[in-house]
Length: 360
Image (cartoon, rainbow, N blue to C red; front, side):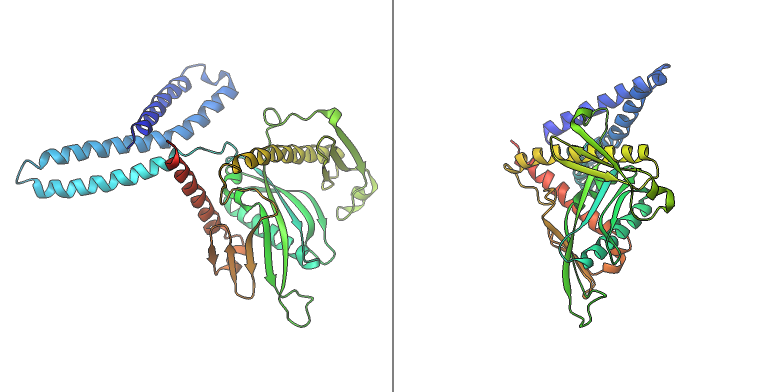
């Protein structure tokens, strides 16, 4: 193990001791915000320190096995123990490298998932509904809460645009590589001659912004309009100006919300989406600058980039960024996305390790 990595791990071990000491103080819970912050930090430190302790224990066992080589009666056992220790050390070193990778501070956050129909007319709108169902079922499997923020239904079913909030720990970390253009190839229900059509939808995954620390929105830079909602919701929703449209004047970003009967709640939801979009805009601008130096394979954040194709006649899904093809389309559309998301996360980690290897 490199000296710099060992020094970093020793530093984290000392920090965990300090955090444990602060959490054990009698008045530790008096400042609840600080207590939660320390608890989160401890949860992040503990697996790293535990792995480092196992690594040091394996090194100690290896040294002990080498000492036994001098004893002819113990040599065979010592050689076997040395091989076991070396394999364990190699695995633990690999695990520690992953644990030390730079963490995205947004990974633990809930997300706003935006799906918009693109090329392909009505078929694109139908596919947007299929994608929403896929993500919703995946979210339910993860134990996340799904909240509809706004929707604009298409004529034959599906959506022109739909926004949902997926509320759960680690939602962004699992879904952040879903942003981009999703292409579908299939025979539409309205196609009389059985010809395969290609259409597309765009997906944007935005981490929820912390209003207190992430984005400060000046009320004077907003134009807020109210209007009567359209669509489902009963008589009340259509007879009052409960729908809200917020325009952020400096950027031109527009957010609408009409899902709730309460104008106040619709405004709150719209402000949350606006904050997430502004946060995403800042992050993408920063990423564009970094990309000039190093292009990330799976984390480009380019909404126009074609990232995946869903081919229904062949029952396959292909992620073009990592050249992964899975012949389990029905399962994936039913929410079984773990193999895809895990592969994308693993590729991203491999890129980070490669980048660390390039550093002097």
